[in-house]
Length: 156
View 1 (cartoon, rainbow, N blue to C red):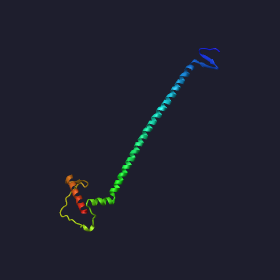
View 2: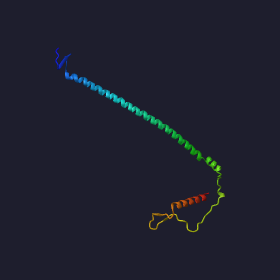
View 3: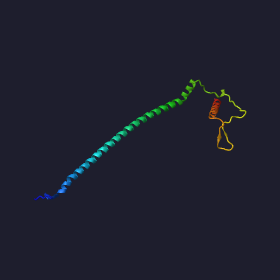
View 4: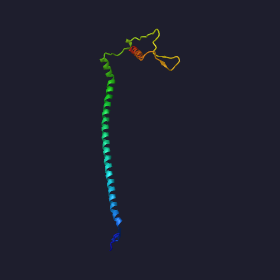
């Protein structure tokens, strides 16, 4: 068997010098690429797991808030039902000195207004859609308050 600088013969195969130089560097590059892929897979897996844990904590917190708010809603509904109950309304009315009305005890009054009633708003003759208010907002509010008070007193 003879050895030359360019080729070597061992067990029937011929290897050249450039092949031997590329084979270890190719294996090293392949190893580095595999390590990088495995490392990136681990990093992405850990990142994904941290996101899942954070989302689960958020869901747990939101479920606790939901349960608390449902309990508050149920408490408020129970309070509304208790306050709207007929027995509660009657007991509060009796406590405030109110009595049940007897229709025979009341007289109906009819009030005839003589003269001109005060105008709060009137339509302008040239503009049908516009409203002219001859009084200030305070006067209108005062007039409406008087109207409501009058209607309330008539209902009682």
